[in-house]
Image (cartoon, rainbow, N blue to C red; front, side):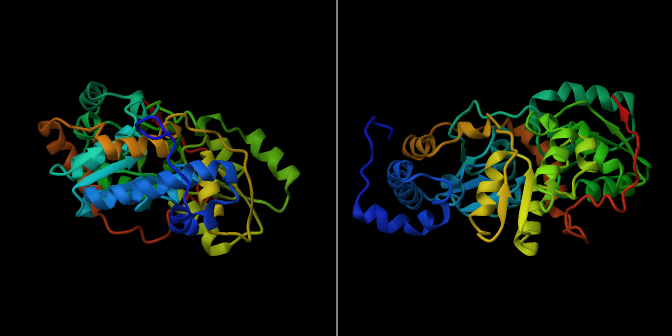
Length: 361
């Protein structure tokens, strides 16, 4: 439904404008759904041009958003970089609230909008700025690396941010800069455990977890492999260690995407949020995707309807206290300024050491 309560019409002009999108998403959207979605896609793309706006769409957005209206798409690292580079006056974050805050931190002079203020994140909610201050008192002189899935307040207490795509690189860089063999990596416990297996740096971790990835189990993976013995299983590093151990490859959403686009496996399983497989599948028709996925309820709060309303009305604007933003910007910018990792973003368990423990706070 449109903002004023009526359905936008599916006209021949709309059909022509949106045909390239339909060609991509038709395996994931029914014709009946498309008649409602296509007019919104056309209207959103017109509004973007009128208002000098861009939409940053995360890999977990549904296909009609990801392929239909996203100007820049990718993982949180890619979107953070695009937010910093963008010349647009308005940024619409098709993702969750911490991403919108990161965009505002990197682009303080731009208007940053999020279609639904309730689009949160279990990881971001698991830790506060006050928690980080207490951690630093307990471990004086130990650098704090904070996953980008955190609030601006937490980033402001941080030495440098990371994503799942560059966490190993950032941890090692932080240790080098501070001349230490210990690094605090917060808030995702499973990411910290998986990073610890890739480096000689000792990891101090917080007990935060992603509500999507923590629900996967090793039994799930083994059941999939028994049913589809030729399938290649790709897991996100926010998954538990026992899931990583029985998977074939582990990496960020960007690394998963690159793996499938490059290797084009006959059959693949992406152990992450549901929409990721749909979005990659639209670009790799020759690969069959098995989908034992978990939905992120927060990501799914973002819809074509509320993106349209956001552009139409200018709500909901995301703001960050300037004093917090200035300190958070330093941590995020340090991450953005790092050169790309020397090797693809992945967690290679052939080389990884097993049963490496971390110190939990």
